[in-house]
Structures are given as C-alpha cells and as structure tokens.
Length: 319
Image (cartoon, rainbow, N blue to C red; front, side):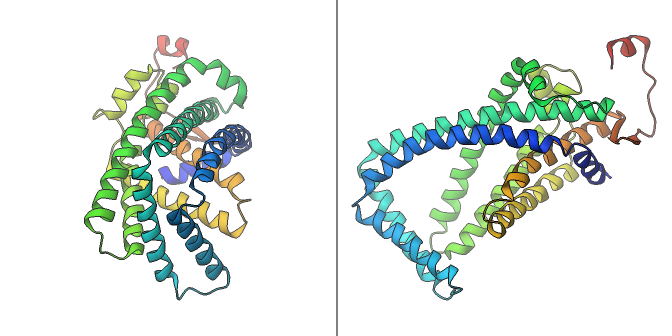
C-alpha cells in the first residue's frame, strides 16, 4: 500500500518536477563550469603521457566497436583499459601534486553542489508535505527562502555524513573486489561493485528515511529528528530497506536507459522525478508509521485505522 500511495502522491506533486528541474539545472551548470575549469587544465598536463594516451585510445576504439554493433572484442578492450588505467595510476603516484590538487578541488565542488541539491530537496519535501497535509500548492522558491536556515543545517549534516559513508563504502568495495579479487573478470567485478553499492545505499536511506519528514512534518529540530530517525521508533524495517534497495536499481535503470535511448533528453525529467519519488515515499512512510492522515490526491485522504482525536492545544498549534 505504501508503494501505491507513494505513486499517487508523486503524481499529485508532479508539477514540482519542473521547479526542481530548473533548480537542479542551475546548480549543475555552475558545478559543470567550475569542474571544467579544474579538469581541462589537468588533462592538458597529461597530454603526451603514454598511459593516458593508451587509455583514451582504448575507450575510443571500444565505443567505435559498440556503435558498429561488434561486441566480440569487448573483453580485450576491458583488459587494455585495466592495464592502461593501472599504468596511469602508477604515473600519477609518481607525480602526486597535480592529482591531489585537482581531486581536492573536484571533491570540494561536489560537496558544495550536494549541499545546494540538499537545499532543493528540503524545499521540495516541504512543498510535498503541504500538499499531503492541506492539499496546498506552496511556491517552491518562497518555501526555499523561508526555510533556508533549517534547510542549510540539514544539508550540511546530510552531505557530511553521506560523503564519509559513501567514501568508506567505495574504498572497502574497491579493496575487496578490485584488489583482493584481482584475477576475477572485470565485468563480474563491476557487476558486484554496483550491486553491493546499491545495497549499501539502501541501508543508508533506510536509516535516514524519517529524518526529513520528522523535521518538516513532525516539527522537530534537525538534530532531534536525526536521532529519531536512527532510534527504534524510526521507520526502520526490512520492507523499508527493500524499497530503497529496489528503488536504487529502478532509478539507475530508468536514468541509464533514458540517457541512452534519448541521447540524454529524458534525464531532464527522470533525474528530478527520482528525487521526488524518494521524497514522496519518505513522507508516506513517516505518516503511516505515525498514523497521520494525508491527501494522496484532491479527493482521497488516507486515514489511520485508529485515528486519534487531536486535543484543543494540538488543534490550536496546527498539529
């Protein structure tokens, strides 16, 4: 039922997709410009390095073969890519300054970008909550400005935790799959890496699922809501993990398929829709766990089986 209600709430809030799209495009354009200013000079300095030339040449030849419909020699190209990449890493290990500075610049740029994406998610979550609670069409930009302080604090904490968690997961999986299991076929390594990474992302999302709804819908402070999401009272269960793990697969599939089949055009819809899809589930899951009634569309209200009567004080506070 929660999946069904999530889809209904998503459809009811579909117009938010375009507002979030514009916001993401602005953030992406700024991020892309700063990243290009870091990457292009770094690649220019690699021009003439044998390992770099071999790596780019292997990628070019592999894509030409794929576009021509020939998939017989892919294993050879993967082996060339692996060898060239190893040689390039050895070269960069001998010349660490450029790599360290460029990597630090890109990491900082990505963190700032994620921070602003977090602000957008907070605003979108507030708009969704207003629609579910009162079926009100709150303005996206005004909502973002109004809640900027709390949204900024939430985004800083979320981005910091997510960065550390993702980095640790990435390094552990890399050491296990690409170092310890070095002799395994590259395609198997990549398959296992993507699979385990999606499962680990599902674990992270399960633990923080109630964080944003507890702030917006539950009127809790950011730290208090974070503690609630990790507590036994939070909506942690196998079904929640199953939803997030399967959603990671679904979102990745839809975005990759959309990017390939429409030359990237579909991403203008699928990317913001992916964010909204997860946000809608978070609020549906929170409301169902807390037995809070909500709108799934203009004419449908989901009520708990045993609805609690609001006290006079709660009514006056708008709870």
